[in-house]
Structure formats: C-alpha cells, structure tokens
Length: 191
Length: 191
Image (cartoon, rainbow over all chains, first blue to last red; front, side, top):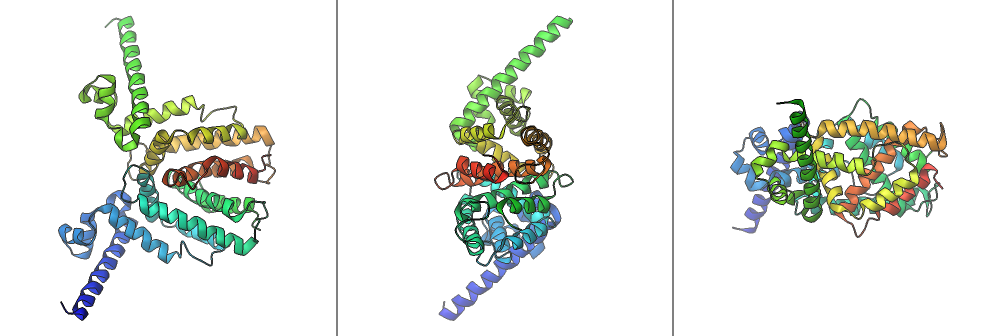
C-alpha cells in the first residue's frame, strides 16, 4: 500500500474509533454502566458487534478509551489547574452520573488481579497526583496554609474526590458531593 | 418438626454459614477477589458447589456476608470510636490487601444498576457517616478545630479512607495509606 493510502487508512480508522467512543459515551449517559453493552454501542454506530470488536477487542478496552477521552475534555490530568476549578469539576460531575458511575465501577474492577484497566488507572493516578502537586505548589509554594507539602496534599485531594463519588452514587439525596469537596478545600487552607 | 428440633436446625445452619464465611475470608486472603470463586470456597468447607448455593445463592451474597463479618470484628460501624483508633485501622488494613481489595471491588460494582450489594453499601455508608459524626462530636463537640461540624467532617473522613484504598491497591509502593490518613486527621485538627 502506498504511504498516502496507509495514512488515509489510519486516519479513517482513528475517526471510526473516535466515533465509537462518542457513541459509547452517549449510551453510558442514557443507560449507565451495565446498559452500555458492546451490542448497544455497535448498533448506535451502525456496526456489527464483530465490526466493533475490530476497533475495541473488549468492553473494558472501549471503556478505558471513553475515560481517556473524558480526561482530555476535562484537561485532567493537566497543567494550569487551580483548586477552585476543581470545585467546578466536581459540580459538573454531579450532573453526569453515567460517566462517573462508569469511572467508579471500572476503578473498582481494576484493583482485581490481571484486570485490563489496571495499568490505565495506575498510570492515571501517578500522573494526577503529580499534576495536583504541581498545581498546589504553583498556588501555595512549598507549604499549604494547613502545613502540608503539595506532595502530601495531592493524594488526599484525589482520594476525597473519588471517595465522595461512591457515597454520592449510592445515595445522591444524602450526599452533596460539591459541598463536601468545598469543605475539604477549606481544610487544605483554600479561602 | 418439634420446636427444639427447628431451633437446632437453625443453629446448625447458622454455624454452617459462619464456617463458610470464615472459609471465604481465608480464600480471599490467599487468592484475592477473583480467585475467591464459589467452587474454591465450597472445596475448602467440604461442600459441593450446589451445597454452598443452598447457603449463599450468589458470590455477591457470600462476599457481602464476609464484609458484614469484617465490620463486626472491626467494630465498624460502631460506638466508641476515636480518630486515633482509625489510624490503627488503616494501618491494619494495609496488612490485609485481600479483604480491602474485595471491599473496593464490590463497592465499585455496587454503584451499577440493580447490583445485589448496592443496598448493603448504601445502608453501611448511612450508618458509618452517622457513627463517625457521633464519634467526632464526642471528641470535639459541635465544631472540630478546623471549624467543620461533625456531620460535615464525617463524609470526608469516609471518602479519604476509601479513596486512599484504591490508590494503594493500584500502587502500594507509591502510596503510604496510613501516613496519608494521618495527614488528613491533622487537617481535621487532630493532634
């Protein structure tokens, strides 16, 4: 195959993958984690299930692609964070239970032996902790008002976000995720 | 069946269930969440898989029974907590990855639609948050040193414990769960 054709093929394949990921996100938003079957996603993009498997060999691979895409839209992990922007992110998350449920369910599965999403989450947390620490350092320097270093505050910030999501998903009437997260930022020393 | 015989039958059945739960905990400790199949647990207690299903109709039902039993041993949720005892609990948890992995994986699954463990976790969090708030009130009164009320600090305390477990399970070399939890208690105002 001439070089140009190979490029065109790759691009078409990438476009197709992106289309599948968007369709999966829609199906997740509508039907939740369990409803987002490969069959439902294939139908949405007009592929057979076999055709879909050509692009994503397993449901887990597709879900990881969805979570990667979400991280890109949220610019997370990324530079230029500020703690107050994280509050907006948590408020935004409270309006999209489907993707938060998918994240939380897949994170839960990923801690089991040999799970295909384990590497994604392990790397993601390494990066997110480092980016959070860098953002906190840019805002506060070597010590937060609470006395913690950015490196010691970062895993707590991530843990609170994740942990509150489980409590909120199980009982949205009782748990105000954004208010609780603001309380945590107050503890860290945010005004 | 005379009353006494019915009682004896119930007691034997309860003893059998307790034996199965202990066996499941052993299998979890040795082989982790995925390795803890009903077949493996049945073999350990000398039952057929069919015999085991008589006591626990699904793997989820058995795992919920294991987590309930663990909560009883940990006296969690329960009265008489103190924040410093929670540090000991987190240190202890860092020595038993099997049960923490089981808790975290099942919690992740439980947020999906119609999951059999959903009610267990929803109730557990309601109780744990209330008990944590009561313990914080007994220690600090209506305001913690950080200014938060016990009711607003409790969900954060729970979220940090759960969230740190995921980070630790994925990357035990990088995440010191007990040290991070102590940092959080410092934020709350614990000496």
